[in-house]
Image (cartoon, rainbow, N blue to C red; front, side):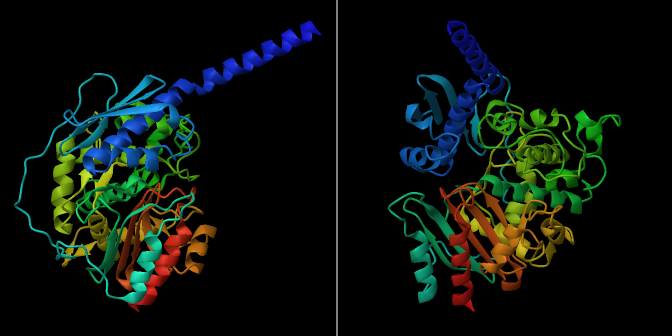
Length: 460
């Protein structure tokens, strides 16, 4: 019996050792503290939000962090504009704010690209003003009732925690509402809605003839024709069919999480991954693909953070009248195109308006002809296009949205915790909802559908 017991203990200990070696919980804790520091830094220093509220609502409630949060301690250094987070007194996560560049997770002490473009006021917006300086209050009783309901918070979890809603009809804000402490100029996190921005910048470069969707993607690490990754195209990357082995589970154990929170060169980490399957054969949601595209954009416009900002300002932000965008970068000057754009709800609506009008503003074509159609054409058997989610397929989720009242031609940008920009070209309508909704995994899409139905009915 003693021999059996000893053998069982040895087997158990060996199993624990293997799990610890393979999954490395210390790495997961480092990801969690870095995520907490970065989130706090951006929400406090970019958005101007209260750190305790951010920690309680955005960080401590996330599935990958929830069990660790009670043992995390954070400090806010407003003089140095820095956030530090520790777990049980160890595993320091640190993020710093850089004017014009948002927040950076500090990893090691190597060089950091902090270049900024020269300030310029030479260009004028093409899009007329969508609203005045004050919050637009609707006089439509049905629309007002819909917003009242949408912002009413239940006493019990899971919470919706809406931060901002903007309704843009025929190029004008007809109604908007904000949570306390948030206003018309508050830059708010878009998380994965940022992917739609990166796709838009690619579209501009395609129109200018500086990038092509087909043919090998211009990634130096894949330049050897004998490398199977040489076959990956920008189209594969935008549609998340690259075939790269870089799992994204949200667990903290996955390579995608480590890429975002433990790597100085995010795109470099993603580019170095091997292929798991031939490009174009399977769809896998992937922050890594967008980080690689972000590096391609950076290199195409000059190679530095300053070049990306200048290009985005000249070609997109200024023409659309976007005044509040803050695009974050990694240490190499690559935009964090998977998750790193902050903008006011009105500015997110302006980006949506561009897509509602086929990439044309005031007669000026910003996106190439056919780009919107390309962006909303379904990838394989999914309801994802190229940077946008689409209703134009037979996927169950798209069919459910249409049954729920969303127009068939509608499409949207989407980010974790319920950041969504709904675009309905046939209605000349854009609805933006920004939040920290904790209704996993769909972040209350059902509530959004009810709001869309009420908006359509009240404006008909």
